[in-house]
Length: 493
Image 1 (cartoon, rainbow, N blue to C red):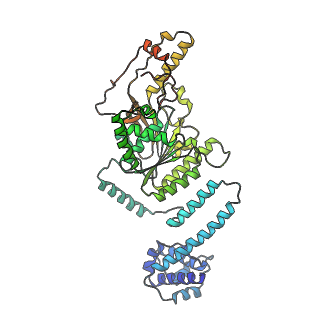
Image 2 (tube, helix red, strand yellow):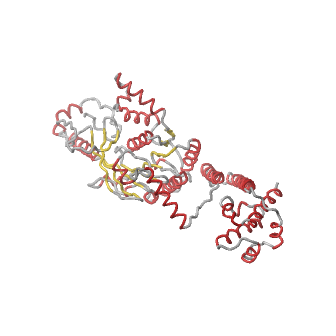
């Protein structure tokens, strides 16, 4: 078998000598490492050098230019030149390439055997490394791609023309469903890592589910890795928002006939959409990489992955400290987004320092556990709802008054409303501007929405006085609002 491959290599090299103009076409398919015989490897490498220097590709120049460590002899070159060239060389190139991949697979098998005996690496890390190498083999990819200035310029121009032909120059990536956010980001783009951070009760999961639903409605495949919430709860939230049925009604199955009919219609639509939810309470970065690669291979139409949330993942390398672990995870997610040419959205917690400031709008330094998140992310968004803090302030004031026996003096300062103002704070945007986007939160149907153009600051309000508040305090506490899980004052609105 080796003799056959070596002979095929000679035929390909002979064809290069007889038709040097074909070299670039052949070099697009083969590299020196694909050749089995060391001398053939060196000859092909010398052909690359001569071609780059615009010198004739022949035996004389190979011998004249070869470094001292290249053991190429005139006899070997004459032997190759004595072989008749083949007109249809493609089949021979394929044979060399396939033999090269099989040798790599053999080396990989040996590597796998060695690593399986190494107690310093986890199974997930080994599987991740082997999977990546196998993927590179099948795609014919090296670790690095080098582009010269001419190719960069041409590719950029081709990309611009392609975007112009699409007709929508405001969007180069996935439509988020929020018009002003699109204007800042031009959509969520291939290869981007998007971090969405917020303090508890701001509605991170709700927001990202709203994004997911919009992607699905535009026929974009979505994968959600849910580490915090069971898949049934995610599904229920999506149905509530899409069918405009209060989430609490769905939870206790308190539905009218019209709502059941609407729900059935929405269920049928969601069932036909390209959504997959990975329900995993624990997941390492290596496991996530492996699962997403497999899912993408099985379903090439997958356009975006969502992780809820980043700090619940683990690095898989034992006791390395949470900050180092989160750094490893964020870097791994960014590399995976580039590898799969798709945006990856990861939710992130913020540290408690936010609560100590008068202005509780998050800033980049509030990202929990790692500054590496700020470095790796292409886009960082923060969610902020002032009403959450206003409710909390009322709760704390009531608790103080109750402790002093003065609860009858309590008057809520916060005005409850079904539609609350909300903000998307664009804290980092690698390829665009930063700023704030005003949106709104629909509490009844647990969804974020674009603020209408005719939006008035005089929102629909329902105020209660102190007596009504106290009367409700005496009742049994109803279930909490799903987006305000940290607020245990009775929901009387």
